[in-house]
Length: 155
Image 1: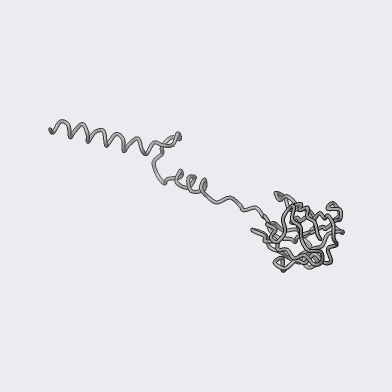
Image 2: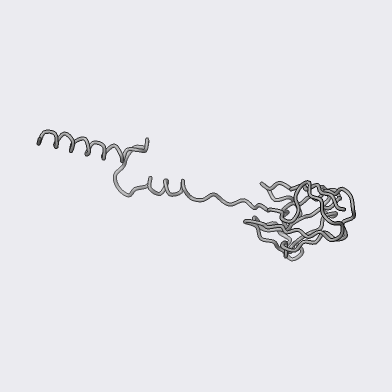
């Protein structure tokens, strides 16, 4: 009976020793540097700005007139580009083009606050294209974001 216990005990000690050998890097004595590396490997990534449009989706038919939408931004701060001219990561404004050229920043409606209550004024009956993008203070599209195109009709 003692022999079995010793054999089992030796196996447990051997397995415990192997559990600490999960890294293919050489073990060193002294302060544990690998522990810091493991923590940084699990550090959260820098979040990328994003947005979501509510109140209107591709293919919708709405009543002609004022159309209300909401744009919810994440990891992005809406700021006035007139008083904040220098581009800064994570801040800017929203560009909205309704039936105009989305390559022309001057043709866009600019939203710098209150993105919960955006009103597309006097939408006429017929087919429409709405393009929305996140833009920096320099009016360039924010890296890593994609404009959203919504095609809808009004009656």
